Image (tube, rainbow, N blue to C red; front, side, top):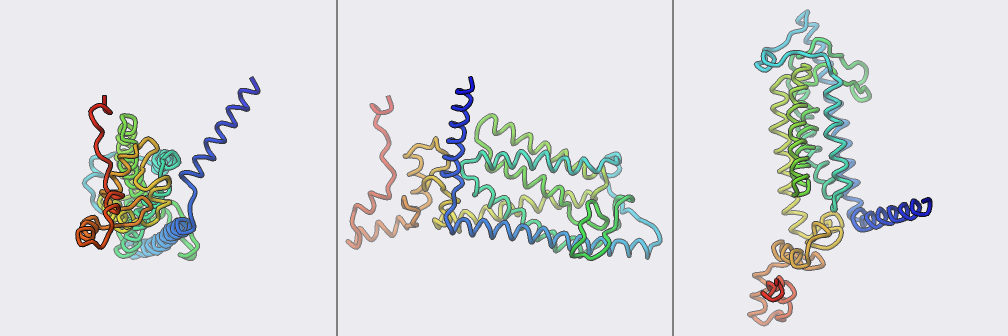
Length: 317
């Protein structure tokens, strides 16, 4: 029994090490890029906290000027009953973030998922930096706390003035977009993606019910986060994937291979579609054909870039 356990542990360790070497190992360029992305994300989150503190201190001055706390009218406040369960907003963060982290670990191109997720999150956070302290709104919740002390060193949860737009909803939507883009295209993957979107909607309603944000703050997060996600996706496709850059992040195993189960023919078709050689070098197929016609390139250059012929009927049978 003990010998079987040790053998199983050795096989598991070998599998993990093989996975790390194949899918997680980065070259110097990839490591520098990921480090830059993580640093940009950290800086954006820090300065978002700074600007939220500025907004909180301004919110206190608004209350002092009015002599009381005032809440703006909100249509959804009339439909959604008020609760005092602020911990639930953080719980929904965890309910979405932890499975998303597990998706990253299980994915066969993990650094690509991490980079895309953090870049979209960073872009949305930069937008929030420019909005949270520009226009100050009366707080929707009378029990919020004002940030005190230096705006650069104070960290307060659920502070006053932290309104436009909802940071919690931003996390919900970015995690759900990660599932929509990178979950396996299987029945289980689709079910988990649907569950992520359901949690996203439920978490947004919990944010409104707790009066942590106005409805407009939640709606803005729903508008901005997908926009940031698709902006990063567009830029990544045209300036990373199509240019053959960051190959250890984009294609850690083989150029054109998304999953270990992909066939060589499928990988080759992807390379032709992207205009990438097997080593990741970009090429222009039309220009290559013209060079061959003019006698400026050898015909075998075209053969090397063409997809393999379809299998014969006998092969299919």
